[in-house]
Length: 128
Image 1 (cartoon, rainbow, N blue to C red):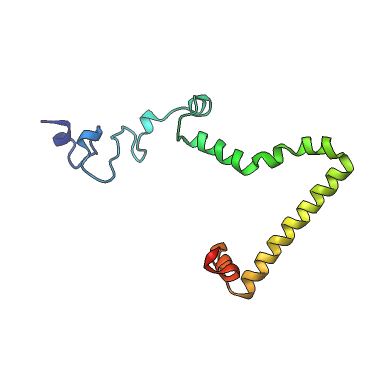
Image 2 (tube, rainbow, N blue to C red):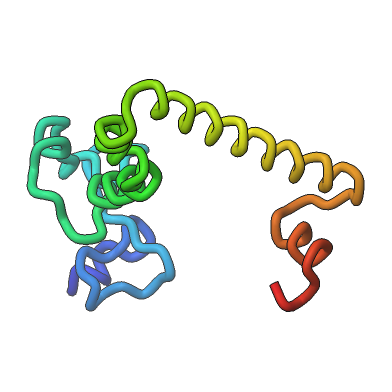
């Protein structure tokens, strides 16, 4: 008898070649914990090599995209324009950001629009 015959109805097959269902769960000795016996420790998960397409690599990529070069270049901007002008530029940028978000909210409330796509369609038509 093969592994597939022995485990039929009890657990999913162990290899991708024997996978027969849409969702195959590895058999484990721990109830209610698929893969619990093979789970990595916190240290291994946190300090191992970053794998391509892994959760940690994706998290770092998302953070670097969200922070962006603009925030990282703020100290250089302060050196170029000086402290006083740097604070003025940051304050004006913050005011412009808050103002533009308030305009979007007021437009969406006025026209009963629920998302940005519909706001663009309402304001600029299909060319946007």
